[in-house]
Amino acid sequence: MDKLVNAKTLIIIAVIIICIAAFSALHRSCAPSRTINAYISPIDVELGEPVRFADSTRYASKWLWEFGNGDFTELQSGEYFFTATGKYQVRLTVNNTMEKRFLINVKAASQANDNPLVRITAPSVAMQEELVVFKGVGNDTEWRWEFGETGMVDAREKTALYSYRNPGVYDVMLTTENTRYPVIHQIEVLPKYMENDSTDMLTLIGMDIREKLQHIANGQPFNTNYNYILKKYLCGNPDAIVMVNNNKYNDFYSYCHGLRLIGRDVTTIDQVVVETRSETDDCIHKLMVLQSEKIR
Image (cartoon, rainbow, N blue to C red; front, side):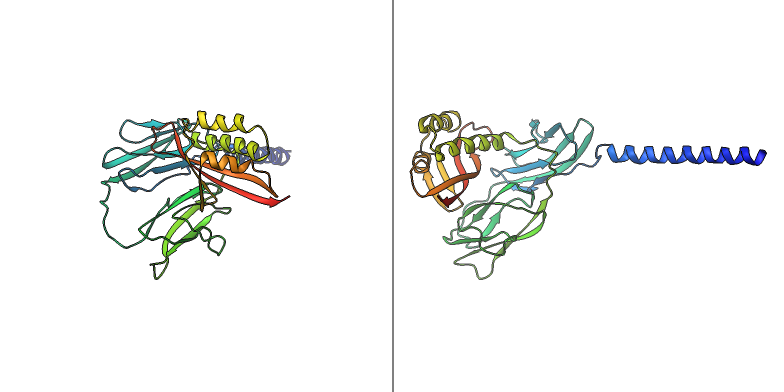
């Protein structure tokens, strides 16, 4: 009889241990990540150049970026311009509980000179499917960009846009008429967490402008959509620059009139990226449009 009681006791204890282990495993799998997945780039920057920041921490819903000089933002991602040289400790707080710090070195802007070397200005880290701006620096005139994903020349302008479809580490190569070998820039593309759909203000503006441009391309009322963008985002400036597919330029007025022309092509506005002259400027001065056409 004692053996039977002891056996039952051992079985009950084993069941309790198994239940506790299962509960702990379930709790760990459902608990939010305690690791911040964020970046800020570049960490060495010249005065007047932007510092890009972004966070894709799982389950994140609240952000506070503090730039070490009294300035802060609650955006998930964006750009920031430091106004003085020095070293700054940038602190990111996620969901009021997790912190990560970055040290940024802001240097005086280099003086223009006759240096013939070509170089690349671009972030070293980006997010999957994010539009990345690559800028060539130098006095050359022929620019050929290979972003490392397609195996071919992707753009031929001094400033180019590219969105990586897959995460990974890529070697960006830039050649010009005066370079013997390509200039190399390495970029790490982090995976995009689909459940985290927060976007910054400039991204939302780009999405709104894309929708109105598509209306114009589809033959909907021109004046309504044109004036909406002109007054709300361009501060009434019809000469704002529109760069199309990395290699064509128009003023905003001419570009919109071109969209509504009747022809054989159906135009799809795939994405719009906007630029301001500074973080405090409310006027968009440049639109970078990715669009595609197909025969009717």
